[in-house]
Image 1 (cartoon, rainbow, N blue to C red):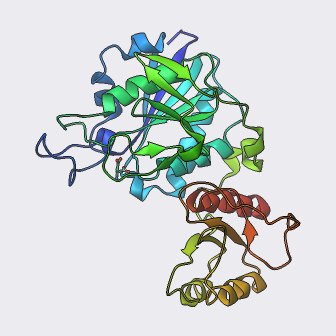
Image 2 (cartoon, rainbow, N blue to C red):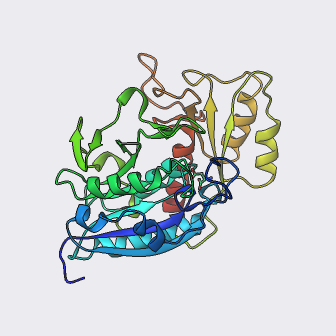
Image 3 (cartoon, rainbow, N blue to C red):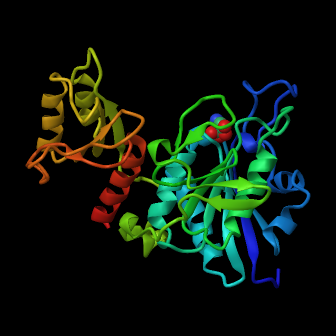
Length: 326
Ligand code: ASP
């Protein structure tokens, strides 16, 4: 260390650390097998790209489909620890692709707004694949992390830079599986340089109570919030079953602009009557709910429309319930 420009690499597992029996195999491999030192060794000039020292830490070793509250809390604490140090310029997180957008959104809400960059990266192919994308993604993520305009929580994958709010995994197999949809990528990484299309802004709109005190997040027992959907042939039984089991919050992935199957509405009303908050999102993969003219205010005992996709709304509702509990 002794350098004021260290980049910290926090490894959490995922396909980027995955191995398969054959190099032709990009499905049916084991995620989260290689340690952070092996990931770094696959990019020989990484310290040069970082322009300073590299500090490596293994925070977790899991397939991100199994991400949980305890791992999130630990990751947030380690980010906060390193970001607070004067000799650290940025944090890069290696992560699985499956829940990467959720972790990015979680971190965006609990880390100090507009601060040093936290760049998440991943891979769609295991490290043993003929066309392993992890090393290039890691190199690009470090290049982005040390860019003078980078700030806040970013995602770098397949040569693109995305913001935590807009990014979503859109494809189960392609190397460029992530998209910011109609908003478009924030920029591109080309030969180790970022070409910004829309440099990150200060993240004040995403401010949450936890930015001041991430240590106060409980180790476990976060509020139980589920996503339910409205679809053809829908009824209220899933919601009633969740209520009977003690669910503490619901996010509805509604059709279109927040429309609900007529058989689902009464069950959601029962949830609201029971004091369970219900947030309304859309299952459309682009855009967000648009209020009807003259209906900007929230009606009593109605699901609350939010401008997030369902699985990010789920995290925000969890954090809101946690803040309420504190
Ligand atoms: N299931 C893996 C994970 O999310 C998939 C990946 O990383 O691409 O960890």
